[in-house]
Image (cartoon, rainbow over all chains, first blue to last red; front, side, top):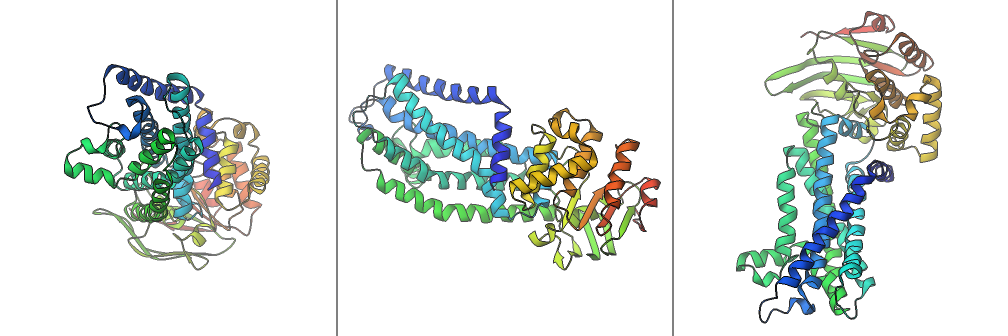
Amino acid sequence: MMALVRRDLAIRRSYRLAIVGDLLGGLVSLAIFYFVSRTLRPAEGESLAGAPNYFAYVAVGVAIVTVTASASVLLARSVREEQLTGTLEMLASAPVRAAETALGIAAYPFVAAVLRAAIYVIAADVVFGLGVDHPDWLGFAAVLSAALAVIAAIGVAMAALVLIVQRGEAILAMVAFALGFLGGAYFPRSRLPGVLEALGSITPTRFAFDGGRSALIQGEGWGGDALVLLAMGAVGLPLAIALFSGALAYARRHGTLAQY
Amino acid sequence: MLSITRLSRSFGDRQAVCSLDLDVAAGERVALRGPNGSGKSTVLRCVAGTLSPSAGAVSVSGHAAETVAGRALVGAALALERSLYLRLTGRDNLVLFGCLRGLPRTQSERAVDAVVDELELDDIAARRAAECSTGMLQQLVFARALVGDPPLLVLDEPTRSLDEAATARLWGALDRRPGRAVLIATHRPSDMDRCGMRVDLPR
């Protein structure tokens, strides 16, 4: 597994400009919401999880959803590229279990995504000012860490989907966006119609947003969300790995591990 | 070492391989020959464990080829020379696959250095794979198959893009491994001459 992490790190480091571009892209995204926040006022009676302003509320959601969505799409795209170039077939010919392959290919993009989310929120506070009085940064880090397994599970499941349907990037981008949209990245879920609100309340990202906001805005009350995230990860990651293993077996049967 | 029993493989309506039987013992070299589309690469992919048979069985030392135990015994150089990470150097690619074969990193590095030295790939291994020609990549792909010293080598047209010197180094490396079983798909008569047994695959 570490060999695949080192591979991803080495490949990523070979695109230094892209790393800078990704970081700037996240800051630009935050800047847009900062100016939206200065232009529009929240609706009457809207508490925004106790946030002093809309920017403090949305920064957590934007940071998490931006990087996790891009990590999901990046992972799915890289699996597809490996299918086309033939490296996926060579990976599959190595004596490595499907679980190790799944964790190996997901580890770097999702650990990097969670670190980037943390950087964005810190940058949001330093550059724009969140205006929160007693942020619990350790709590925020704990929520992000707890979210890692469940977010990686989503990524591995998406990679499995790509192995089967081959061209799934557009679907994956939509799923990632939906997880943010329904989970309450941009506005309170209570604003959604009934069915969507119910759906949003069970998305894993919802607990990351809620826990992250509790830690940063209220400085407490994030423990329950972190526990739910850990539980979801404990269940979701093995399921996603089983799905990936099944997808690899499917690709072996259908001869689609390599499509050159 | 390798046992193929009534192997058939179809892709949709097209039958690529039909009821092939083949046994390859340790130290034996077998050449698969046949026209384009006769299923040579398909057989090799089934042996490398990246393609499941539609019918029949492929086993390596008693382990089904698709299993982890089966794949651990096979060093594969399949058809596509681009099956390397182009942003990494040749050496990094080889070390990565050494690690994936279960070697600890330092041991993988040592094994790679030995193979690079043996095949005289120092210059090629130091370059990014993206900067290598097709023939250079083919040499790296062959080197990758040797890393970890697997007892069965599966080589798909391994000399297709090689010059004479590189071809000689490849066969020299195989000659220095007399105990290894080798299954080669090839069109070259000179490659076939180096194999003790030839199997014709009809179209």
